[in-house]
Length: 316
Image (tube, rainbow, N blue to C red; front, side):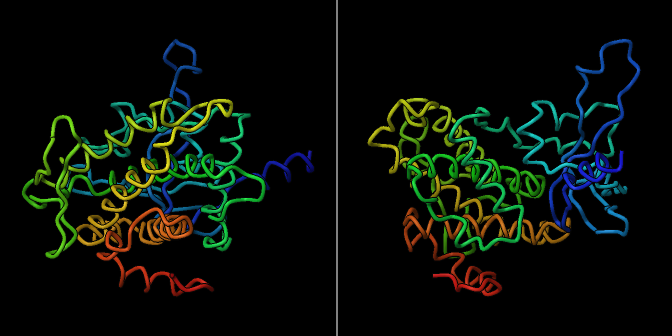
C-alpha cells in the first residue's frame, strides 16, 4: 500500500504562481452516468503557493465585478494544457458554478491535438515538458538529433497557437473596440489585416477583430491536412515552411499587443511568470530557425533583452 501511495504521489504535478490550471469536479447525482459529466472546471490561475501542496486559485476574469478565489490541493489540480490533451470536455463549466466560469467573450477554442502513439505526439510531449520544467529553454527548442525539422516545426506551431490563444483569452474582456480601436503595439506600430479573401487589401481593424480573424486563419491552416499532414507517410508541401513563418509572425503580433496594452491584466491575475516563460520559448524557437524577421521583432526588443537576462545565455 505504501509503495502504491508513493508512486501515485510522485506523479502529481507541482504548480507555480501564474500557472493556468483546471480543478477536478466532484461527480453529481443526476440519475445519468457520471462518465458523461465534465471532469474538470476552469481554466483558473494559481495566485499563491500555500503549504502542504495547497494553492490559492482565482478566476481568469471577474464575475459580477470581482474575482472569485478558492484553494485547492495538488491532487485536485491539473495543468490546463495537459488536461485538454486528455479530456475533450475538461474546461466546460455548468451553469450552477458561476464562480469559475469562462469569460463571455472568450476566444478559447478546441485545441489542435496529436494522436497518441504517433511521432508528433511524442515530439509534442517533449516540447511541452521543456515548458513545464526548469530546463534551459534556449537548448530545449533545438532540433533533437535524428528528428525531422518539419515535424518539429509542425508540433511547435500548433503548441504556440494553443498557448497564445489561451494567453489572449485572459485579457479579451479588456480588449474592446473602445480600448483598442486598432491592432497596435504602442504608438509606432500598427498591424493591418489581409487574408486574400474577405480582406483582399490591408485593412485597419480593432485589435479584438484582428486577433479573432488571425486565430481563425491560423486554425484553418493547421487543420488543413494538405499543409499540416497528419501522418508521417504524407510529405509536407513546399509551402509548409513559408506558411509556418507567416503563422508565427502573426502570432508574435498577439504577444506584442498583449505585452504593450494588456500586461497590467496579466500581472493582476498573477500570470506574469507563466506568460514570460511562454514568450521566451517562442522567441528562442523562432530565432533558432530564423522564422520571424528582425523588423517584426522590433516592438518587443527591449523587453526581450530584459526578460532573457535571467537565462544563462543572453538573447540573440
